[in-house]
Length: 435
Image 1 (tube, helix red, strand yellow):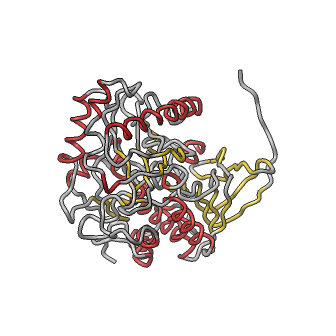
Image 2: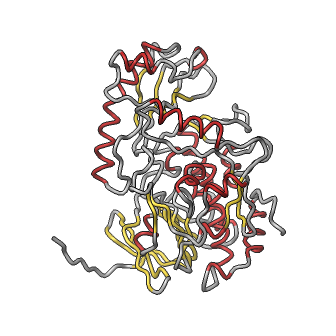
Image 3: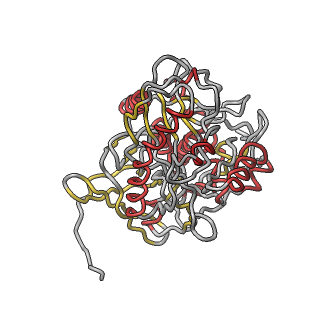
């Protein structure tokens, strides 16, 4: 059954640049565009900035550096330097103290000229002839419209692009996506006493029937190396996730919450340093690693990763290995994943790949950009670029490009050197840009 729905909407927002989503990509885009002098409005569906790092309780940042150079320089590195100040800036897994990160985002956004609201999801977008005319937002008083010269999709799922009619890809050839994780916070853990890797006793626990589902990929418990007793859990994976179906997400959230006592039993009885641990909280949102990949003018791909590619229209470089989580309920698949993650798809210090501006330009649209987890990549490249420093890089670039292109008919008509120059002003790492 279908129903026709029609309503006249008030236009509450008119701005230069509209940004959907306030995760790391959205915040970086908003700060970049506002610092370059444009009027910005950001709509965030939840009650905080930060996405996976705050609402999703992801316990650590992936690297901001390639071992030699700060590749997520500019706004991303500015944020990094404000948190976990007792942790070396060049480190692989910087622990995230959630409330500290929330406050840093709040402070930066509140002190900028960008306007924003929480609890304001995008529910539709109206486009014509390759241009978005307006977006429809849901607020506490009802539906309303927002109009802008340029729109940036930082929703992670590519919702704004999809609502506007942009092409997208998802998952593998059968539509299967990487499994997600429900992250968690734990108290009374002593990470300094840990003498084994977190997965070292999994086979014993499987044999003893501790787990209702055998999952050999256990990223583990993370936290500061101090006496705080704080642990962030990246534990367990979804089994049959459809990230575009609220029913599927609901079922997986329920299932993963039920597994927390199993992980508590495993850590307490099989590992050292966790004997007194207590579950404090599971995340408010499911940690989704893979959703829509918007079809852009150029689809960054695994060959670019292997070639350490340099692009003329480069807007950033990144270096994280291809981290393509699999359903690791058998040893063969998990060992293949681990070999690829630690050897085949891992760089030496100083190595990185370029990210072209074309991978932020949805095909067929002239006033729309995309940043964050839903940029134009193939599946394997998404598994590298999806992490938070990668989102800072593409968000900052989208914000700068929008600022430069604001008065133009088409985002592609801007001189890439002008965009790169704007990024340089923001502190971006662009070693190959001729500006």
